[in-house]
Image: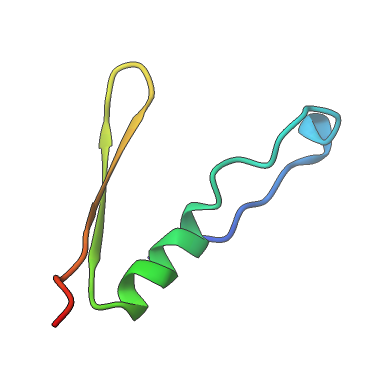
Length: 54
């Protein structure tokens, strides 16, 4: 499980708060899905798998 976002003292003046991946992961799991994180060199690839409705 991902840890909640925390911004350290030296970075507090930077804009943005990130993607909120812990929130996304909780929502995906609640709906019976899975989330995978992979290195995209550079960047991050996030794959979401959700079950079909019905």
